[in-house]
Image (tube, rainbow, N blue to C red; front, side, top):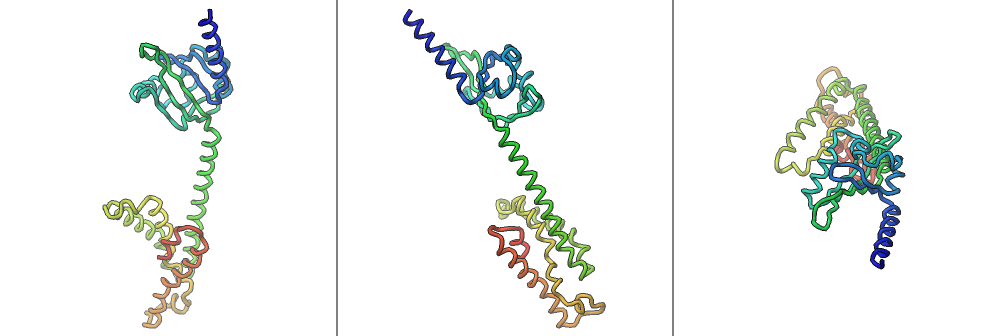
Length: 262
């Protein structure tokens, strides 16, 4: 009787602990059928126990049919010593909305070492994932706006020099081709990143921005330039670099302007 009483107390303690854990826990048999869950799982997914008991995990919770099935996940668990972890796993609530979880899968074995079930412990990451996606969308919009603004700024020179605007897009493509080619070389492969190429292409359209400082009488001259005039035109690179350097000093980190002024 004493052993039975202690066993009953242990079972009640386990049940209380199981239901008070803040992470969602779902117990699934080797065939993928739901055999138990805790209160957090019920709150997270919105189902009643009667709706999920004995149901196949995938048919209830799987949100994306491009993802591995629960049986395939269990194979990974067994191959990795009884545990497997995934991040940002898409799931489906009862109301049809999607959520994302950090998921830890573990095998549950009997005293003989045979796997009798699997535990699926999840932490809800939906809010974080949604915030990260909104942040990325905002960042992408800023990058698009930045690119359009820089191209528009560079095209200001077109009003001074009709030849400049015609090759802005070409020079950007030439820059991309050359930088991509350099990246394939052992010397530069760890230095020239996708971000580096993106910034380099963006800054390349500013190479003639200094021409706005050249006098119309020289820049728009129909005939051949004399030596003094030609020397003045060559100053546009220095003046453009100086202008970009002044702007770049106002930025607290290295930007595409660092490449532009160079």
